[in-house]
Image (cartoon, rainbow, N blue to C red; front, side):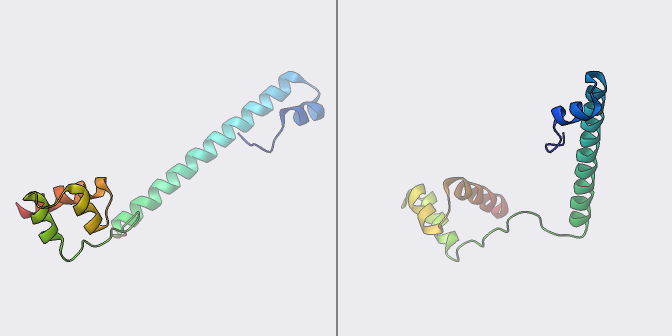
Length: 107
């Protein structure tokens, strides 16, 4: 709904509860349609960007050069996961996602 429109202000102008409610309902419906239109335009824009090959979202940082060595040390239990995460400067979730991707790529 339009936040700047006050029901009481409309009621003072129209001086009829029923008409005020109808006006508010119309404004509410117009706001819903506008929101839906914006969402559709946004979806079309995202689709066009994907078709052009534009990468959406935050760009990924490259892996450290010595990631294969860190991975090997982590898998052989020379270092803990937390230590490997610090060496790679990654959060735990990112580290495990990268490990999974690295293992999938190595297959």
